[in-house]
Length: 192
Image 1 (cartoon, rainbow, N blue to C red):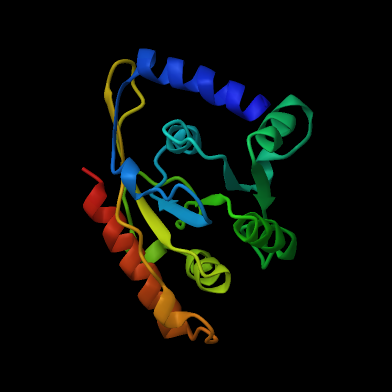
Image 2: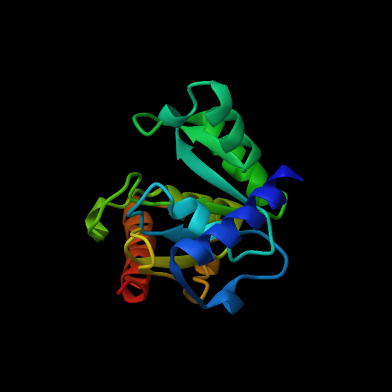
C-alpha cells in the first residue's frame, strides 16, 4: 500500500518539478518478470524509472544506503534491497532471483554506481547472469536530461532483449561480455 501511495506522490511531484517525458512504455510487459537496466546519472533515477509503471518493481541498491532508521525503512518499503558491490553477495543474488521468480520487474544499474557519462566497458555482468538464470528479457532504459527545476527529464524504454539462446547453458565470460555490451549499446541509443 505504501509503495503505491509513494508512487502517486512522486508522479505529482515529478510533473511539477520537471518537464517529464516518457517513451517506450509499451515495451514493459503487462505480466511476467523482466529486468530494467539503465544508465545511472542521479540518485533520483530509481524513482524516475518507477513513476511511469503500473507494476511494482524491485531495486538493487548499494548497501551503504541501508544504515538503519527512516531512510532504510523507506527504501525497503519501495522494494529496494542491499547489495555489496565489493564482493559476491549471495543474499542480494537470492533477493533478485526471488523477485524475478515471483514475476516482478527488477531494476539494475549495470555500471553499479552513478556516472554522468555512459561507459560501456564499466558495466558489470550481473544483469546477464540474472537474465539468463531467471530466463527473463532485459529492457534497456535511457535516462537523459538534468534534475534542475523545470528542465526536461526523459525516460526511454527500449525493446526487450531476449536471452533465449543462452538459456540452459553455463555462461562463459565471453558470453557475459557479449550480453552486457549489447545491453549497454541499446541503452546508449536511448540516451540523448
